[in-house]
Image (cartoon, rainbow, N blue to C red; front, side, top):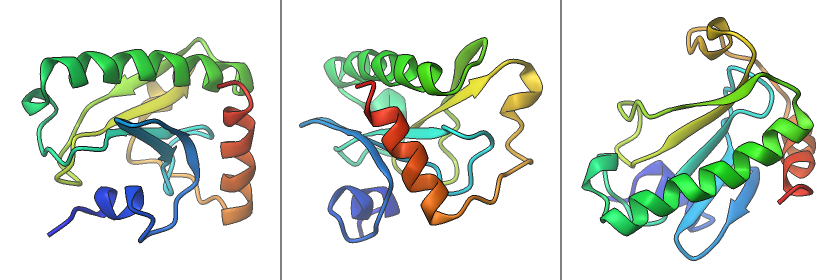
Length: 129
């Protein structure tokens, strides 16, 4: 059975897409910890990030760098933090979150943004890619 992320890639579940190429898909987290919180996933459905082929794993970080630079242009911060937790969805994924302090990556504190706000944020990031 396809993961929720595979369903998002396939268009079965809507998302606020930030980036897509033949190997990767990035979209806004619907329960972000900061504005601009983006999820980057490989299109191949693999549960554990370290089960990806080396080339795909390396490419994921190249794409993460590109997206992080775009996020930082729209959401001024000290850096874009990245986290690979991987327990909530059985599909490898990386969180990219604009942060200025360690407290900005607190996954217990979620923002409640409207679909319109998320659409605007996605567009703001996309213009820099």
